[in-house]
Image (cartoon, rainbow, N blue to C red; front, side, top):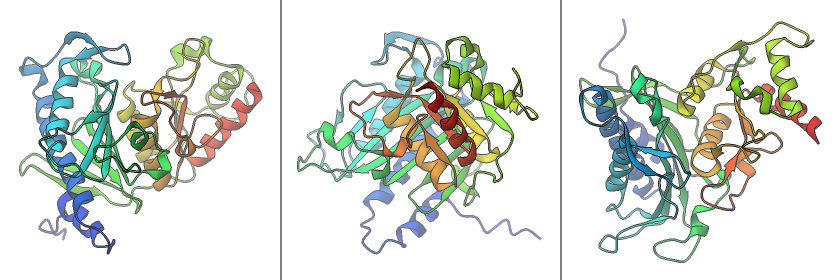
Length: 337
């Protein structure tokens, strides 16, 4: 009989992971705990979206030139307020801000940097499509007490922790600190994230799923077109076709790929030659999660984790999922020269 009393909360799991690091001070664990708290607050507001005045746009645009949703503002503020006073961070970087966000002078600063996308896919919430929060943690590399841009512009391989929260039919927090990938489902009856998916691995051999917005097919490079034709089994491609699965919300599309396998793609195209997704706070955190789960992530030529951002909001093409399929995508894209 299943023992329903043997549950592992995210707080307990974080502490257990901390004990594996003799030099740990507890500061890093506190950051993860505070992110989990912010996720609970955002989840509650998302679940009430249809009943409260939190849908719709504010009338502003962010640094990306995208129209800001009310829930973007709320999620941004929740995460900032959960982290600004703890003394663990020297600064933060968010999709919603053009520059690093300083820690207020009235609060102490710490040795870590938090980068995050407060609410990825928020434009989908009024049609009840799953959305999410993405985050990563780095160690400060400068000697400045409250950090510099150089502390934020680090390669993905320098991440100390990365994760996301997906707000769907249930709310899940998935994270890694370099010791596997673990998923926690929010139990609303007790207000706790409970370990539900320990040691997540992308299925191997690869599942026959691909995820991409095929409405942009006409704007793709020849290599990208041939790769998708290969997956679909069309235009003379040999072998049975893969099944297409595309949600249109990055966290949700990646979450499915992580659990079910296959490949998710957001390639460059004629209108977005540098890609669309942000390297620092979207691609790199998910890339590390994929690698820790036995997969890969690439910009079509290089591992995402090897790329050093040159600016905070740098964009990149993105291929993530089963190692075999990401490498196959690179083979086809190499034909573009």
